[in-house]
Image (cartoon, rainbow, N blue to C red):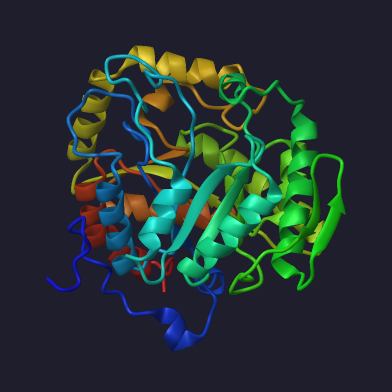
Length: 391
């Protein structure tokens, strides 16, 4: 076929909405009552450390097909996390997350295959980056995607990762002071039509300049903070904040804690005369009947890779972030931030509850991504529209 890419992936046939409505991708996404994203499985094993059978794959071809499908379905965004692990990943029988794609490269490559989907990459900016590098790369990614690229700027918190780059551990709040300076420098480079001299506390540059300038002023900025210092950073600089349920993955417990958490984040942004939107990532298991859902969950738990689960939790425990403090060990086997389980009607009702708790968006992750996304498209998306969660 003439429109096939070398990998065999056919580019999205979704219409170019920017040509129709003139809106920026972020402005279009935030018009939705509930933004909808796909949490990409760029790491082997994705979110679920189990030997249970599935087709989920970390490769670019697999992820690109998911992004093209999400684009055609009208999803607002796709997101890739970044990680740095050793030869066995998190170990165990599955060598959980041994293989992983770089999200910056993967999302930029997918820009040529998609039309409207916002493509968000995670970058650990303290792992050897200079603001000039990322400002240039970000502006280029922004143009390649026609304003659809987003930066999930993170500082990193795991000592093992920092050691891989020959770095000593940096105190928690200092990391966010560094992130703020890094962001200020990038923003200056994205906006100024002049060479810039900058002597900061952590970086400097002389006669620095970046072109082209981003399509809509700057790329979409994202953060996934939970600490006071992190949330203050997110409130000042981010457009979207990826949140974690303080109450754990059980939906009932999550709904008890999310309203106050969302209110706090939006209050911090309001104090900066800004508006941010919060997005949470539920792990969705959905089938026609509760019995079928239970069969899938039982298979996941029966195949639990206990070594991988414990190593994963142990690595998180060695850092000083507290995003997942309320989550229990068994919840990590299934994966995700909150668990949304049930029939299509039950899943949509749970999405409604997350919306009512102050979440502006969800980015779903699945156990078996390709067939689960197809099922979601056929059975859940129409009900979301009927419920007023999607336009």
